[in-house]
Amino acid sequence: MKYPDIGELDRLVKIRLWSDSASSGFAIDQQFDPGQDAWARIDPAGSALFYGTQQIEPGMTHRLATWRSSTINALAITGRHVVEHEGIRYRVRRVTDINGRKDFVLMDLEQLKAIAP
Image (cartoon, rainbow, N blue to C red; front, side, top):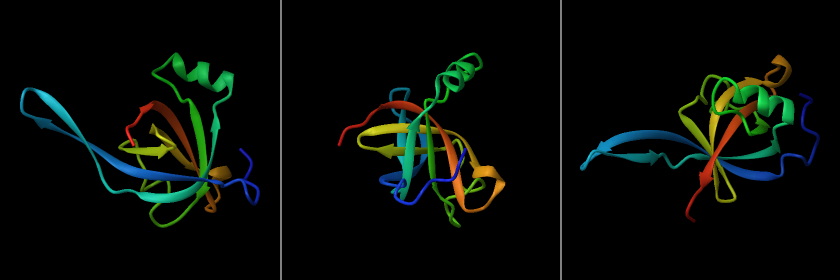
């Protein structure tokens, strides 16, 4: 993937840590930390990538590129995180540095659902 151009990081997203806990009545409560904001570029996954990942598990639907920082990097962001943008929640599937360099982070996402405002 190529590096984002100036002005392409034009979507303000929130990256949040997700945890589940048992509640009364055999239910599970989803809890999310306050999160951190990041400017990002979000693109739908290409057809080949989308269908290729569907054969193994529920697949990647979107890709996100953002600036790398001490709190947003391939070690800090894991599959226990979600990304929220414009009322849609995405599960983080994979995080890596773009082209192995330490300037930008690439996240493969799976669209989960719309969330209440």
